[in-house]
Length: 391
Image 1 (cartoon, helix red, strand yellow):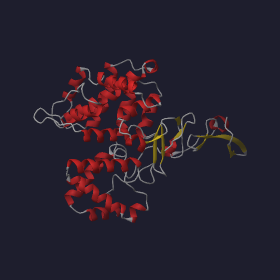
Image 2 (cartoon, rainbow, N blue to C red):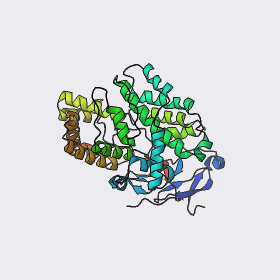
Image 3 (cartoon, rainbow, N blue to C red):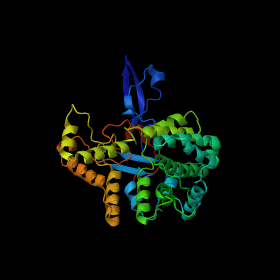
Image 4 (spheres, rainbow, N blue to C red):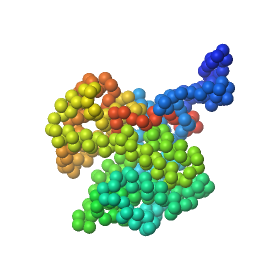
């Protein structure tokens, strides 16, 4: 029962609305009975002030730059060298980190379910060369329901690990196949002797004429990237999945819809926008002129990769990614013209009050964009039944 209430007055009628409190002390006014009591609805475009569910999975504080999974700060999860993406996936599903035995069992499930049905593999031959990998991935995930039909609510309750492992593993395989198709190379099958991230790298970059050498550093960086983006509360694609899933549509149809939402340039598709922006800057060879165009209200040029719908300070994921990339590139002695452009753009933006005063700080690649349709962090009230986010 709520111990605190908000009073609303409509046409001389006063009603009390319960105030509910989340794990981290954030408050929400419960308007569940508003229409029944008053006949009125709320109007909140973009869900800027609306919490649509209770969640015990992820906590985001955009003002303070905090991201936690199941009460554990993302920085702590990344810093623990014993943890891999597989452990974090288990954590998000079950609420606790796996024991060594549970981790091994879950990893085995991922390996067993890494192969696609061979008839599905032939689907990739029918897509036009150059088809966008995200479009291919969304279509292929939807097709999984035909080959793996037992994904109803009963299967989730009885064997959540198998359903989860099959999706996580086959999505990785299909993503690699889609990339290979987009560049006109033959697909590379998963290998049982490789870890989740090592397998993904091998399927992406191995070639009959140029065998891929898997480095521990690359596997480490990919694990970090996947951990950082394993969940981010009620964003646009998550909202899409929850909406489709509320109809009890099958698992793969709901995830396919989420991938389609993610592909948009104001969501995950911002990754592509950032790379294309860097290429334009590299071609022009002048960062200052680029920033002059961005600040010109009459110019359509936009600074992509800075600013976030949720984070009003540095995105905590971006800090970690930058440090990991600098360490990796330094150790591997990798040079990339676009990387140099990225560093120049960051330095220029962070020294320009035009951007700093607008809180346009560096964002994580998977969600970065100047304007985003992603639902803000306020769209979820953290459930008090889970532990608090603690350092």
